[in-house]
Image (cartoon, rainbow, N blue to C red; front, top):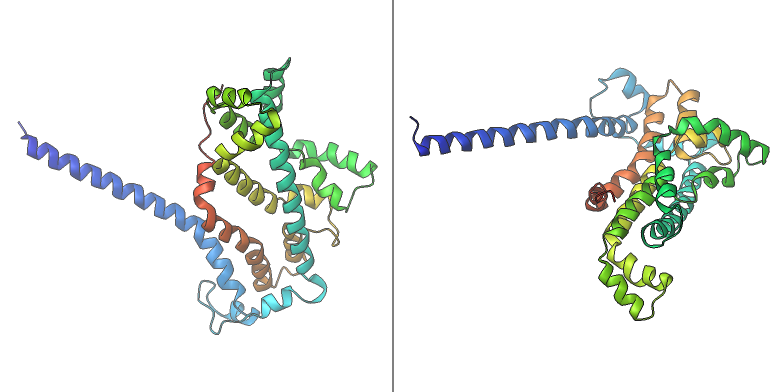
Length: 286
């Protein structure tokens, strides 16, 4: 029969092995995520001659910035796609957050006929693949004359999103009713309650939602490539894809464009990773 000390040592060894295996899996996953971006950066700092004559994984010697200079000059100036992307992301982030907050508050705190049915019907649209709605949307916006326009880029996604409304509704419902009743007794209406109580109590989730919206809209490709394929309102993802088609042999330039498109998101994640992770903690479904 094993002694308690032997069993305890064995349990400690098992926990250590389990912890080591967990960290090994996490490191492997991190490497899978980081290595492609690192490869993009390294390749973008090489000249086409270096890329053709050296090992693809070799560090550039010497480091050159000619790809970035070429990227922001000439006929494929990435200044315009970068500016368009910033404008689209800014407008959509403000629109989605504001509209989602209002809709979520209505679903969480207002009482009206069909509230639950309407909420779950709207959330059910999360099950619809985005590609299914592209053709109807494209047909409608083409008939409205909104192809290759800023309005065409932002209009379909400006008034909130099912994910954001679901996320905020669950958090708004978690606010103790006693707090809201006290505000009502003090004479606060719905607008003042939302502004002075609900929003301050949900700042972390609002920050996380804002960051998630920025990232998702920055990476948007399908709809921008359909509604605005021209250069005037081309976003970064579409401009990068067009550059790859035009300069398929110049991979160093393409990697420079990829790095420019990815770098802001990497910086954003490193600065606000806690808020992004916090957004994954959706409350209970009521």
